Image (cartoon, rainbow, N blue to C red; front, side):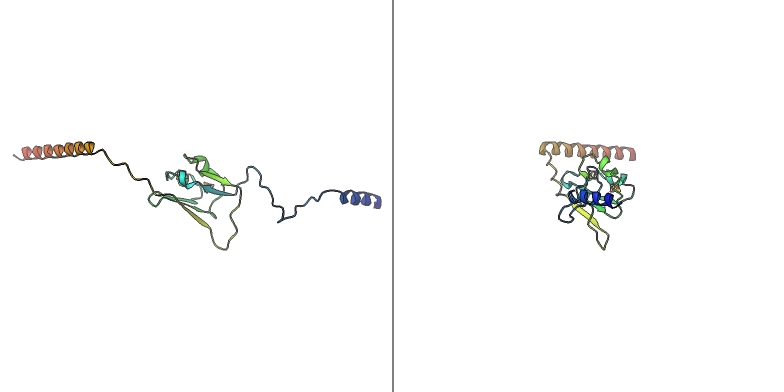
Length: 147
Ligand code: SF4
Ligand code: SF4
């Protein structure tokens, strides 16, 4: 028994430690670790697909305010939102949300919407003329039916 133990102890003396010197040596996350959902807000088109597909209702998309919000405590890391984003602007970060005393809700605000291109003045005038003609025709028709 003692011989067996001595042999084992001597062998372990020259082995590398099986434990990690945390926090000096950080753990490496596995390839498919599900930490927290992140967004590249610049690419988001505010379609709301992620909000509709989220089983726990953790995402809120506000098209008018151009914001994307996630309730970190509500998210169950299912990746449904990521798989259904048409712009592929969501991804799973391997790092977990930092522990906190309060519920974490993160809101990302996108850049302002680009200004709408101004309409060609000739086209605009033609459209106005067509609308005026239509209105005049309708008024004429109404007058005829009254007589
Ligand atoms: S599905 Fe993608 S593009 Fe659509 S609102 Fe969500 S993050 Fe934005
Ligand atoms: S990973 Fe799942 S639970 Fe979390 S926000 Fe996306 S769809 Fe919702």
